[in-house]
Length: 329
Length: 254
Image (cartoon, rainbow over all chains, first blue to last red; front, side, top):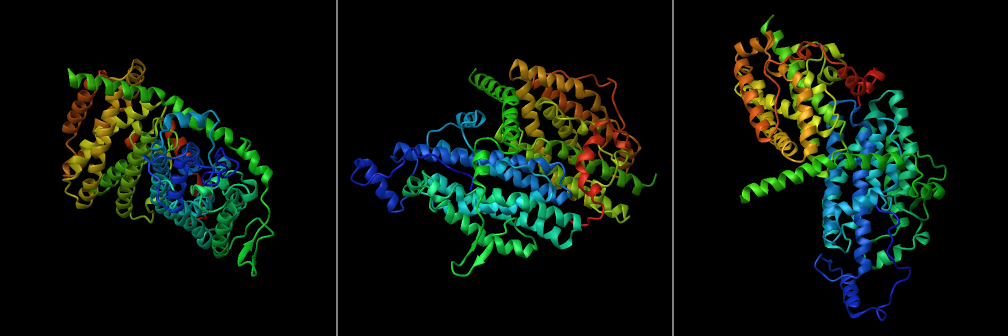
């Protein structure tokens, strides 16, 4: 999940009676599964929540290029280098696509990026973890894209049309990335040396819990979820999504011949789900507050790229203006 | 020097130049000056490394010494690399990145338009696909040279500086040696004199539009990349790029 703890501005749901006629009509549309489009009336809170969520999602795609960018110059074969570059390029494309969806709500890309650089906007906590060995490129694809897909498949039915349509396209590419990531790990586990197998297990040990954190806090610790669910921006709760992810991922983990760093992980026949241990929530909130291993580096890198690129963008604008004047003259 | 040897060397030059420039561009992933540039720059890098792979695969067949394309990339040392010195120069600022790209693209485009008609079918086939990509690369880098040159005072100063500093590496693009001559005679490579003229004409045309000056044709030029004598930069590029296969020599699959 690329958006965690999105503020909705409301702590309690309004009843239909408490709503204004416009709000009531809006809610009835939502309840009838009619998509909301850019030109439709919408409550201010709905608009703001969506801007926050979509911008967080877009920022996550952009910051998410960096942990993989860390290995792109060191990819070990031509095939893996081309795959990794294409994957990162897809992420830039997703970012662009999501910023466009966000702009349909009246927000401005540059302003939202500025909020990110000022530390006022969030991105997914997962990208604040370092990528320390090559197998991380497999594990990120498998676990991180995998967790994102679980969330995004549901978001294809989100109530806001442009966001929903962006998700349809993004999901297709993410599924491809996930399979590619898994294949990296599978190849190393099946045909690799012991050193390569150790890399795979090490990558899983480090990324397992952070991947589970991507779904956000427990439902009862998630004050904004109720409103987001009522607006059908969110369609399933954090805990539901996390369980879905674990249930689909554990068999894949076993197929790899690897283990998860969770002694409590086991199949529960009665529930028909896997049980799993408690997430270290202190770590989760620490990372969200900026105290993850790479928060500072990730933001500094993005900020540097945009700051140092300012003269390039200014040149493009100045040149376009001159061209326009010449065309008129 | 046999024709076979000349052809192998020539293929490695084409492959290594595309590979090393692609590697330089991959250093910028996640760090482009705008999101749209992120996409465009990665596109170019993907094209170049994809082309390099095609050239390497052909070179590996001709070399026939058991090495495949990956081994040519990841297990040769700097003195065995045959790329142009220009492409191993560092990214510095985006003006350097663009100037380097532009000088290369002009050479690449004019070379490929000739290779399309090479007497060697395999080369003609690879070039036919590559020239479409290189045409776009040249259009893009020319446009950026114009934007920077005729943009703001700062962008003009930066791109002019990059042109001045990188100029000494451009002579190698159009200075033919025995290999280039042999390839021309074999009906494969471009006519060296023609290539030189075409390169200068295109560069001057775009530079003029961009209000930039270019160095003299008879300026002192730094040569050597094509015969394996490189600048200090290449060793560092390879140290990064070849790290995994070198550190884990027993690994046969990744």
